[in-house]
Image (cartoon, rainbow, N blue to C red; front, top):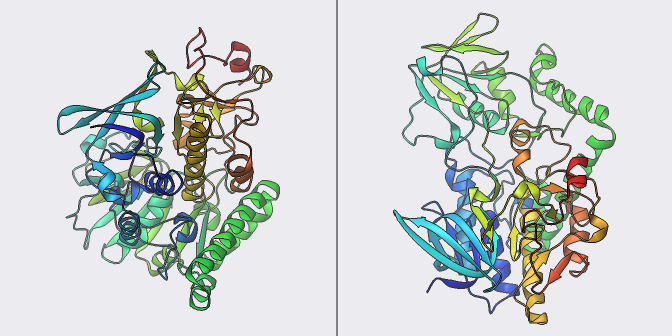
Length: 503
């Protein structure tokens, strides 16, 4: 039978967290996890490029319920995959995961109080039904990364790669490599490939803020020696979440001071003669886009050794043998890597309908960054862009369990966020605010809107603990029990023209 109390979509960090919380807090509920790929792990199984690692410390990127035991806090992809597999086996989740099931549609029936989830599996269509649906499929398209339109790309005769689809057998020993990009992926690839490659060039149109820190947390490793494991992990996790929050808030209130400190650290790493102004000084303030973490100053070491370089210039066109810049200079490349970002995708690209009416998510308002106005029994996990993803994933899973248990207490089969009368005229803004990264800005018009409490996606862990973990469930907006669908349809109810125009 394919009927469950809960269906979880995605077997990465978010889906595994949801399953563990569900088993512990709602032990009587049946569930399955549908994973589109042939292996669990999500991002950490998909990406296999050289040097793949976390860009957050593993004491906060790790789960709240399972201590990170390795010495390195900035961990590589294989270590993170190992951690996820350990979690799945320790908590008995593996048998609940169905790999190779790509979810294509989800249809809610108010009469039945159930979702029908349609999947594709080995060329066949297979359906699952559930009362509660948890979307843990991440926020980008796993099938295709983002590559801008470069003139002449079709003329290139070397090896062209996007990091999202890295070939396992790629030989770059002694090769000239050009990595186009300035984000975390580019800054990971460059030092990782520099040891074997003849030369690695990071070609960027504009710089990104960079901070170097040790890959080991000395305090965490000391605490683990002298305290019980769970105590040591909890203290370290608390310390690191506070440090993340402090750093981010400093960038909001004193951006020039933070900028000066970050640039001094770069100068210390690269020496007084390096052109930090050109190659490592962005035009925006820190954390207007994501800050790049490099462990143990590895990028600086690769640059100082002469095995790697950073070129900051616009591309004129791609040639048969490399890249020609607007200055006329040509960068020769045996291998061209387009580390140019992700294609964001809402809810894994699944097509949703409520009582036969297609859901238009841009016309909905997010409820606490997890649910959507007038969409019943649906929770999505979307982590933080300014802190570790898992902090929000764990909070979301906790909240979902609270909601499910409250439904049982009230003996109802439906829970729906609905805009109250006082919410009708609130000013609406984009799903993510104060973040100018191109990969976000390209697609924000496809995402739900946000307004004032509780219709916010705060991206603030301390505030979320108050709004999600500690606030009462029944706040007048979250409605338990069946109620009639408004005449305008579930995706439009409540988002009147005045509110939409105010956005």
